[in-house]
Image (cartoon, rainbow, N blue to C red):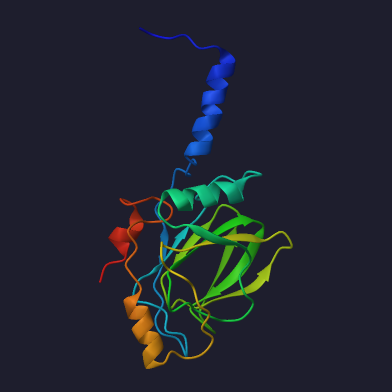
Length: 191
């Protein structure tokens, strides 16, 4: 038997659906940046995945990104920006959700690849990937998330054998933070 609902119930259902499942932009295939070791920056054999305009810009975009990352197995750990010095993480893969403003980010170390990011973009950095903020708007806001059990460190010098050993122990993510278990990351991060 079909149940009739009024307009308010229908609108409430639409709002609930939009809260439960963030609407991804039509184009969810990421750009890939393949970065080689650069000076003291190790980078990684896996490419950086850059989702341009992954989510529509809304007043609650930071909350939406946190929900999306959580649903896809990458619990958020912070809201802030990107450091203004070159660094990498040896103990974690990282997703950066750009929730407000815009910035120019250098990937891969000094003389690496400069990219411009804006609200709605998402970048997935494999462990060892150098990154540094070159410039940003005053309202620049980033959501940082990592696969379960991974805690990030900050490395600002050439990797030692111990650092390479830590990087080799970072677990392969079970899912893509943007598109889930059947998403791009498990297909593109192959040895």
